[in-house]
Length: 319
Image (cartoon, rainbow, N blue to C red; front, side, top):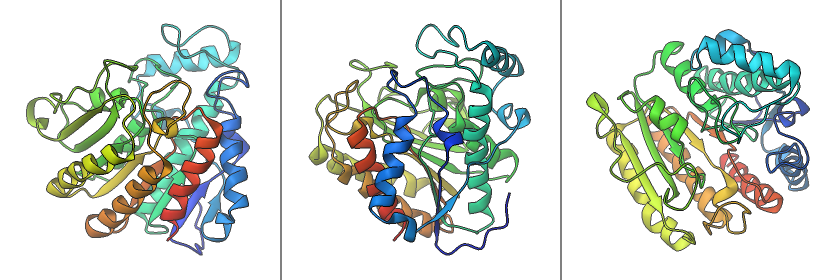
C-alpha cells in the first residue's frame, strides 16, 4: 500500500487496468463503462475534490481469501486461452482475464487498507462490486467476487467483527449473501428488483440469515418500475437495520442498473436515490466507523446512466 499524502477525505481508483475487466465492446459489460464515467468525472471537475489513485495489482493469495484454489486454477487456465465460459453461459473467458481480476481485487483491498489506516475516510472504485460470483464458480458477468474478498480481508487481516454490506444494484447480491448467510459478522442489506422478474431470482424477504446469523441479513425485493418515491419510502428500513447492528466498516455496491432506462433491468430510480444512499451512509459511517465507507460501482449497462449516477455518488462522497 502506498503512503499517500491525501489532499481530500475521498479517493477514486481510475486506470486502464480497471477498464480491462470486461467482455469486449459488444458486450453489456465492456471497457466503455469505465471510460464514460471517467469522462464525466473530469468534465464535472470532480478531480479537484478527490484524490485519484492508480489501480493496484494483487496476487493469488488475496483471491483465495474468498475463492477456492480449484476455481482460481480454472480462471488462470482460461485466462491464457480466452476460450469458453466460466459458468453455465453468462460469463465468458477473455484473454488476460486473470490479470484484470487481480487489478480489481487489488484496488479493492488497497482501498480497504487506505481507509483502515485513516489515510482517507471514503473511497470509490467504478469497476468493482462483482457481487454474483460464488467461492467456486463465476456468475452473472462476475469472474471473481471482489465484495467477498474485501469482506474476508476485513475479517481476516483487520479482525473486524461487524462489517455492513449494502447493495442497491438491481440484481440481488447473491454471491455475497449465500457466501456469508451463516456468518453473523456480515450485516447484509440489499434492495433489488424482485427475483420473480430478474436474475438471479433470489433475495426473498424471508431470507434473513441462517443459524447464528439469523436477523443479520435484510433482503428487500422491489417491484418492477419502482421509482424514487418507493426507494425513499423504503430506504429508512436499511438505515434502521444498520443502526441496530452498529457496523465497524460499511461497503456500498451502487450498481447503476437500478436507474430508469437500463437495457436489462426494470427498476426506475434516478441518480437521486444513489446520491441519497451515499450521503446517508457517509453520515452513518461517521457515527459508527470513523467515517470508513467503501463504494463499489457494480452493474449498469446504460452509459448515460453510469456517467450521471456514479458522478452523483462521487459528488456526495467528496463533500
